[in-house]
Amino acid sequence: MRLRVFVYGTLKRGFPLHKHLSSARFLGYGKLLGFEMYDLGWYPGIVPGKGEVFGEVYEIDLKTLMILDLIEDEGEEYERKLLPVTMEDGSTISAFVYVFKADVSNKRKVKDGLWRKKDSCLALQGR
Image (cartoon, rainbow, N blue to C red):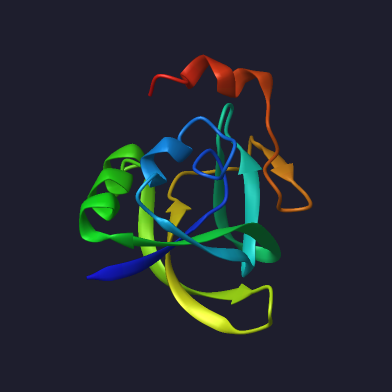
């Protein structure tokens, strides 16, 4: 069974946790409407809001989804939801997205919805 996932932070290409998507097929870039991104330290979180979040879409298998659930602490820190993602060509697909569950009122908002590399990410290469 093949599934789709939208990643917007440390699972993107060039980031420390992307290695967990080594068996995934890159489908393209996409954006998620109705969400805002916040800086949680070395990784981002998204919550419902008025903005948009930019990321990458992958086709994955069930085993990879289970690995991602562990990485994202699904059910505790993040909740995995099936949401509409707008692809570069304007089409809309359904993909799993990890949505942050905790309060972000004391966190810095990433206004443009695009997570960029930070030096602090390098400390987690082994994760």
